[in-house]
Image 1 (tube, helix red, strand yellow):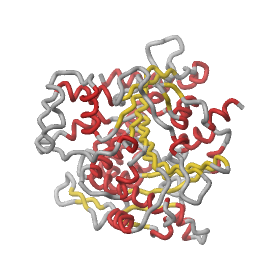
Image 2 (image 1 turned 135 degrees about the horizontal axis):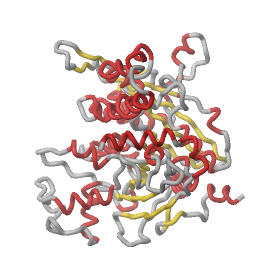
Image 3 (image 1 turned 120 degrees about the horizontal axis):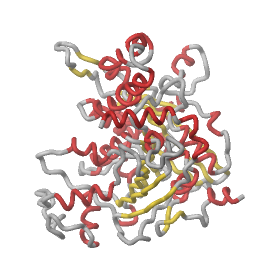
Length: 473
C-alpha cells in the first residue's frame, strides 16, 4: 500500500508540468442533506447571505474563522496561509490580483516582531498570539527531559472589501510554525530537508526526500501530535482564538487585548464583555476541520452558555476536506458522552463538507454517521431516549431517525461529493492528482460560488447573489 502511495505521488510530481493542458472541469456529483434524504433536499445559505449588518450600520459583514490543516503552511517560500481562499473569494467578485497585497504578520511569512523592534509602524491591532495559561511542559521519550511551548497559535485579521455594502473579515489562525518549532522539530526536525539537517536528507533520492517531508515530517507528524496531549493545548488555543476574534469583531481589537493573551484570559474577557458581532462562519482545511469540530463539540457539551456557543449559533461550517471519520477512532471512550446542546431549527448550525471523491484522506460525513448508526447499540445512559427510534442494524431512513442523529451530532450536515482533480498522466484516466484532490478546492471558481452563494434544492443559487452577477458581467 505504501509503495502504491509513493508511486502515485511520484507520478504527480513528474506529471505536474503537463497539468495545465488537461484541466478537469468541476463535477458536483451529489449534494445531500442529513435533514432531508430527498434528492433536492439540500440547502445552505453561503457566506454572502450569512453577512448581516449590526444595528445602525449599512454594511453587511460576515466574520470568517479560518484554520489550516497538516503541512508546512508557513513556508517562507510559499504564499501566506489562506491566500488561496482569499484569492478565490476576491476573484469571484472581480478583484483580480488581490492577494498580492495580502501579507501575514505571523510565523515565517510575517516578520512583524522583528520589524517592530526596528522602529516600524505598530500594527498590533492586526494580529495576536494566544499563549498557554501558565508554563506548559511535555515530558519526552528521553527520560528526565521535557519540552516547553510558550506560544500556541498566532491569529491575524484581513478585511476583504467587496463594495460599499459587503465585506468579509477573515481571522486566520496559524499553528503550524509554533508547534513545529516547540514540539515537532525536536522529534523529526533532524530529518527534514532544511537547515542543518540537509546533509541527512541529502542522502536520499530526490523524490524519496520530498515524500519524507511532505507526507511524514510536515504531514502525518501534525496529526500524530494532535492526537496526543499536545492536542489538548491546541484545542484550548483555538478556543482562545475564537474568543479573541469575537472580542475584535465587537470592537475590542487585538491591540487593546494585548500582544500575547492566554486562552483563559481571552475567554474570561469575552465572557463579561457585552459582545455584539456580525455572524461568524467557519472555514477549515484537512486536520483543521477535526480540530475546530472538537472545540465546538466541547463547547456544546459543557452545559454553559458562552461566546463560542453564540458564534456557532446560526453559523455554517465549511470543511474543505476533512478527516472526521478517520481521526474519530481516537475518540473511542468507555465513558458516556454528554448530550449536545440543541438549537432551535432556525439557528441549528450546518456543516458543509466539500469532499473530492479521489482524496485519500477525506471521508464524507453522512455515510460515516449512518455507519455508526447501523453498526452500534444505541443505549445512552445520559440520554436514554435519544436513539430509541430504531434498533441497531436498521438504516436511519426515517425522519425521526435523522432528527435523532442531528440531535446527537448538534448539526445538520450537507455532503458535497465533488470531482475536480486533474489526471497525472495525460492518457491514463484511472489516476488523478491526490494532492490536488485534497487541497485544490479554492482553485475551482464554481465551487467558490457554492461557498459564497449557497445552494437551494441541491443546486447553486445564482439569483440575487452578487458573486454570480459579477460573473455574468
